[in-house]
Length: 516
Image 1 (cartoon, rainbow, N blue to C red):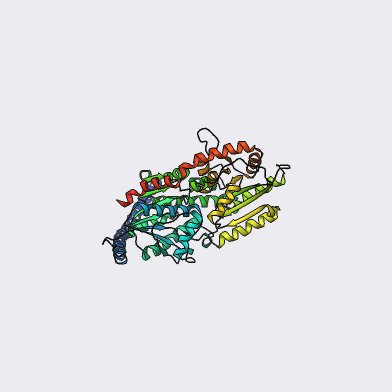
Image 2: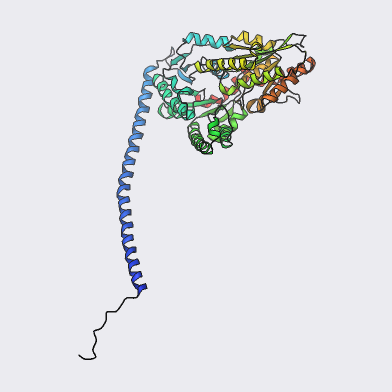
């Protein structure tokens, strides 16, 4: 028809078209999201159900193991002469035949319990299979002058290598702690006690004996496995025996190790808080355990027993003219004791001839070797002496009898101690009681508890590095005999608070809740 045109289809507005597309995408996205949520729910609910079943099975399994272990205890322990089953008190001390301060605590604790409680049997879990029970007890008497009133039962463990540091060149703290769990399991299977006391610092065994063994558990902490000071060392990238140079030189490695330390500190706090009774050996250890374990209600300071009376029996007289001064160190040959610092400071003292024409000097290193690693460490120390040219002036005395130890301390002028953050320092106390002028590290137990003024009078000296030690040794040796005698007398009067008697009183008071 003329003039007529076909109508054009209406065009949609571009914004409207975009809105439709967006809306369709939102609908499609919403459907996809809803589908994803449904998929997750379909997976999560069975996963939660399965996890619940596994948890129930685990609880039933652990409860069954606990009942089985308690039945073993009843089967293995026979009644005493009076018809009553004796109370088994077990100490976990894999290195009980060593000659350190921790072993002195062990034997004094056993002697104390034997004198207090009649119907008990003391058990020691040990890995010292190279010695008999009689030899171990005789060694305790020979080294520490401790004689037990009743026999002790020894449970010899075959897997002590699991807690050897040499087995774990990396992640040593974690490796030794997990190894102690397996070693503790072996101990628990061989003897199930009524009361379990970790006397060597293996805190990861505490929940094992408490929750599977059904024991009352306690611990005596000589040194926290990890401390806030160790975290600070890694955070500040300081090089020490437990923080290698390749880690301190790498920010990435330092951050990784710091994260590892924080994780381990968390686990350490959890297992430590399982303990019913916590005893620590010094104010320094107390501060760290309180911050890590957060169990202040059951934590107390029990100073370790030092045989001060035996050393106090050594006559204290004014020094006479002599041709030689001796400087004595008493500590186990472990890396943290820092014997190289003693040798280097002593070599510096000799090299600079600080004493002029005064009598010659001799350094005597007395200590115990626990294993092959300690023996190798002594060989390295002897090589260091050769390198520094002081071999003729340094003497090593390993695992010496108690009488020889007394003789060396009685003849010494200076008692030397160099461990950074020493948890307590039994060797420091013994040196002071024997009448030496003590020179200890300016940290830890010596700084907070031992080498402190007594009745306003000086009891000894503190140092921190090689130069400090060399300077302070020179200063002590230049004092008049009368002044040194005054310091020695003050030190002797101050050590009575570390006696065996004081330990027995505070130890019995602390463990009393375990016997109720």
